Image (cartoon, rainbow, N blue to C red):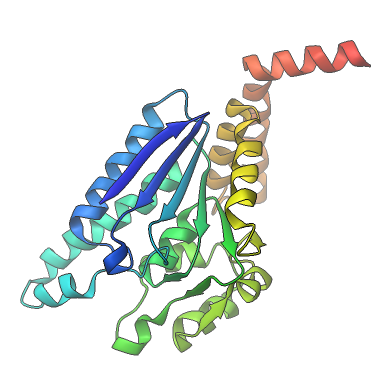
Length: 250
């Protein structure tokens, strides 16, 4: 279900159901949750890279699983939905930056999974979308992620029309960070994550933590939180080392 490896500070997590376009079923969700926790515990990990095996990143929830659960009660559906929600929350709280490398299609919950990452790199032929409306369903959980990535009107357009958009358009919308040519995609992704892994791990971790904790804060509260974050950052070994090197050069 999941391929996991660590090399030069990069934890590589690969969704490995290519025959099912890496659709999310309970087993894959459980294994993904465990892999994220494993990367969080590993002090050698500086960046997490999330990819999909085969032609697509992830096609969303496995509809066969939803169909088999048609007779389940509302509390049963809440439990299964909560397991995916826990993945999104774990990604938000993860101490390392998580980068999605998207080839092919990232649709529905799969698009939500990419959006839950801190950064999204896409090949030029990649496609993104929330087509749940086509089957009378809604992207309920991922709205919390989508709403923080694009404008309100863009978000509503995506979820109400179910339109599948190209990587170039997704970048214009603000949904993804970078678009690379198909031919150079793997090399550009490797260079990008290697560059990120070379940065101060404490600075990246603190930045992620404080940025996301500012969601919903007033300006004054966010500024006060930033004051404490500033003070904490000054006390890290990375900052002390960096400041000492800078002062020696100046």
